Length: 142
Image 1 (cartoon, rainbow, N blue to C red):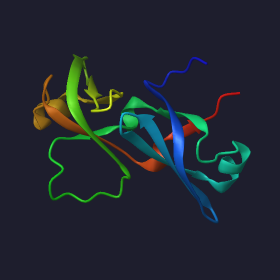
Image 2: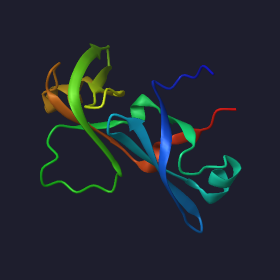
Image 3: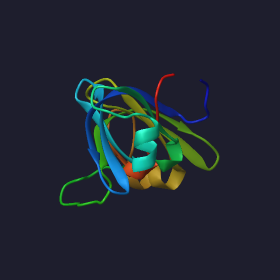
Image 4: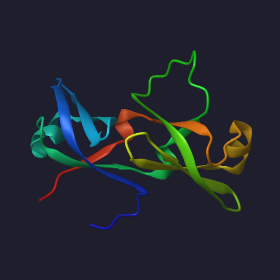
């Protein structure tokens, strides 16, 4: 499968919590890197999601927000992944920022040049990727 999303992660469901409308899916990416997705209960059933099942998590880079100081901040986003800025590719309007997470996973965000400057991002600096669980799309191998 080839897709346009920059962030495609293979993982294993570590926990599945079914609800009346939605299911919360915790995904282990390896090396303590984790994601949480929220999908409809209907999708969870159609994909036959269960603990231990392999999944692919897809997140488009523009859906990944960045922040540099998490202390004292409470967010509704379930995924706050902190790591080290690996590289920055500056374009005419937007900038692509790749963060290396402690477990070896890398996540890429596309933000404005102004945001990179305001956050003081540079290779080697600490940053957090913030992703709403509803922005994580799940797929299963066929």
